[in-house]
Amino acid sequence: MDKQFLIQEINRLKQQKNAVILAHYYQNEDIQDIADFVGDSLELSKKAQAANADIIVFAGVHFMAETAKILNPSKKVLVPDLNAGCSLADGCDPKDFKIFKEKYPDHVVVTYINCSAEIKAMSDLVCTSSNAKKIIGSIPQDKKIIFAPDQNLGNYLKKETQRDLVLWEGSCVVHEAFSLDKLIEIYIKNPTAKIAAHPESETHILKTAHYIGSTSGIINFIKTDPASVFIVATEAGILHQLSKTVPDKTLIPAPSTEDNSCACSECAFMKINTLEKLLQCLSSESPEIKISEPLRVKALQPIERMLELS
Ligand code: 13P
Ligand code: SF4
Image (cartoon, rainbow, N blue to C red; front, side):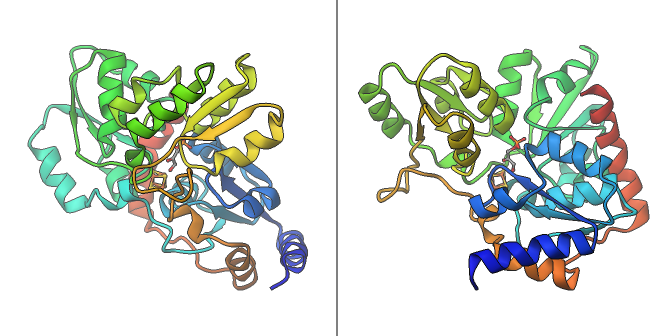
């Protein structure tokens, strides 16, 4: 279908149905451009909570749309493709997590927002990459902590907070794929470059970084730092907003191990959403996120605690 037609129809239906489109920085460029708001996980959760449109179309992955529904249950929450999963969320099965949790009965359970509603419902606190240090810091020193499902973010938090976290061994397929050797090769060719990395990356990548933070944190760092060349170790979708806000800076995507033809790393789950699916979802008002009320109420508590602390 013609792109201009798709854009026109999406905008028409959005108005007609009083819908708002929220998109993560990892979405396709066209989706970012048509969205009412583009942000990181924390910002998107806040926007979803505050939304007063009748329909929230969440252009991101399933756990993000599910979080929007948990926070704003009276709205119809749609996602362009229900199969937009996440290796972190999908790698933490509620039955297995229950068994894991039972091994550490006296531990406070902190979970990264990249998990299902069932896992959130088993948690004391939720966090995102932008507030994780603060959330861990809010827990009294004498309390022991379980952190799930991202072991890379968990290892980073252990180092930053000096707390002994018990980690669930999950990881993000995109951030775990960055090649240290290739990153060093690029850095040798660009010795004035600054390296900005997302904390879902492995420790050896984080050790090279001049800045570590969430997608919004990385964008702000690149906007404000005086350097003119940056190597960006996160999903390549972030480069779209950056190329608009800092067109004069050189942005080099960190290379992944698998990737010989192109230097970028893309999340296949995020990229499953397209303009066609966005239009189809607005037009048919499906797929819709559904969640039972008892589960929603349980999952809401640790998210609300996070938002109070953020
Ligand atoms: P943030 O948006 O919090 O930086 O998280 C990145 C991510 O991997 C989302 O799935
Ligand atoms: Fe999940 Fe990684 Fe994709 Fe984010 S980039 S949605 S953490 S698989």
